[in-house]
Image (cartoon, rainbow, N blue to C red; front, side, top):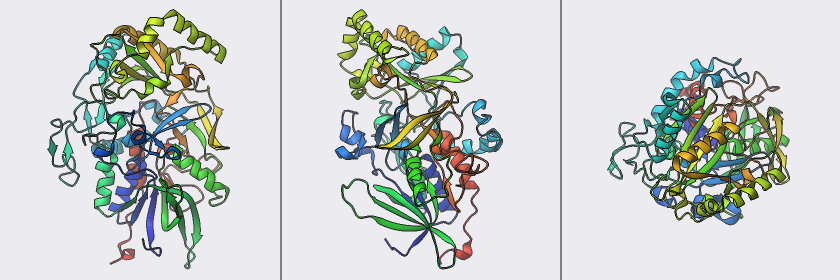
Length: 528
């Protein structure tokens, strides 16, 4: 790489925000480089099941270079994605638009008429991500529809819109989305393996749309590049540019590399952007707002499993999330599935119990084991756990927030405002028990929830939220970082209210809006 080369923009992270930025900035005539910490993976690289930990999980200390990351905090356990395509590699494809209370939330409503501002961008995002209505109602979806009828909300059940190509299963066809400009694709096999990496090229991950098109138009990308320093420097003509340093993320010892850019877009997600900015604020970028790391939201989620005792029941067929039930104005529940054989989670599960203290929860756990020995043994020794277990994801738009700050071993969490995140949401547990009766099953939950009372989320948001100035936000309503020119944040950390539903579509739409505000590059300044 030419060390004298100065990029117009360097994008740190290739998730939903970074991929949008890569394409739209390239289309505007800018010279763009994307740096991604994770690996670039193709269909054959994904594991057949999540028992193949080296291919599935991202744990560099153990030399595991997969695409799924599990991070534990005092108040929350976070599931996230790493790799070229970011969270799209591991997410459940689901593309809902939040309800009105998200757009009118007090935390950002004074900045813009968000429902109006984002309406067209949601349409663009759905088109780019290849949103299609799930065509099949599987066993888990049918049970959720039955539950909808039982609670008096049959009209509030619907099949999801998902980023999946529903062509003829495994049949390769020319690009069906972008008039032949995209890659060849294959039809979905409904194997349930969306979250362990689609091995059939049916999932519309970002490397098949935004990133693919960006690279075709001239954007560059370097994978396995872990950015650790961004410094603003003055140039000979007294303007500013940025010096970005990174090292190889998959090597224990590697030489630092340096590149320069006129602008930077941070798109590493909450667990990438927030810790990096907290580090940079201490020395390299001191003008960053003191709000970095604050107003972190979790979608107020509860993840619970139901293992059936009916050996004829199959929960693993279908797309990862095929349906959704809107239980009230603020809450939703979705059935989530893994492919047959992907039973890794069973080693982390215990009976679903509740209790306000550790002693009470442990006592309730022992009581459940004694009261239901046959059922608990049945769950433990279920032959194909993913095939017999339906995961249920419950989400709410409760406005409680956390704060992330530097700790001894990385980030640490603390309470900021609102009720503490809890694994024991009464409505969620009632719905799960009702669902278990429908499918003749038993509810189970992660040990971190049952014992520690710490909830799990796949949708960590905020930490670099919008504001009117640096006193109440890290970025303005157009995603520009306060205190620095030509610096943006486009990822989940910029989400400034609780969507209460899967946020990927909203991150994409917000990023489309932000990039739309940047003018095209002056042709007079472009190289011949």
